[in-house]
Length: 199
Image 1 (cartoon, rainbow, N blue to C red):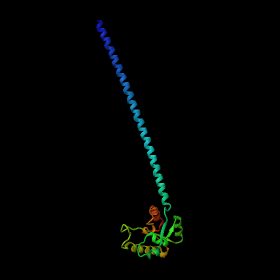
Image 2: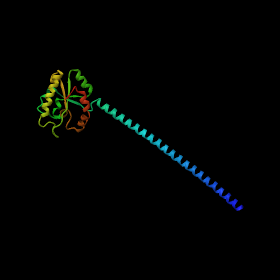
Image 3: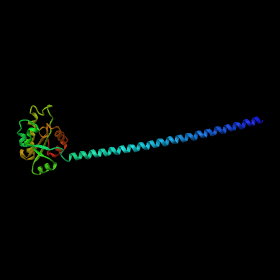
């Protein structure tokens, strides 16, 4: 009987020992799960903060780009070179900027154009597609059509040809100085918006 009693006590001790191990394992598992959840939560918080920082940096970059673009269109980046309407209509063909330099009327700022408009001058921006790589109008097709358009603008505006100031790329943009050419091209939106007529 003592042997049976001893065996029963040993068996109970083993059960208690096994239950303690199970409890310890459950506690360890809970601690590991909690640590994992805490790590995931911390990682998610770091991710959200990093995303917010990147979005803020991007928003600031876009704001600066917009401000720079607005500043660029509020003033010329290059000279605004125009040809009087009568001189333009007297051309036999389109000639480059450099060949007409002495005949060009140049405006340095938007305020100068506004002052010229108050004096009765009318500004015309002529847009056309180049018909050859090296020459904008080799067959003189565009020049004739643009001269007709300039005469029509003068009639519509009720001013003589001499009161028109004509802007056209080949004449108004430097062709040989690439730096000045790039600045003029960057100013195209401002040039166009400064004109009374866009043809």
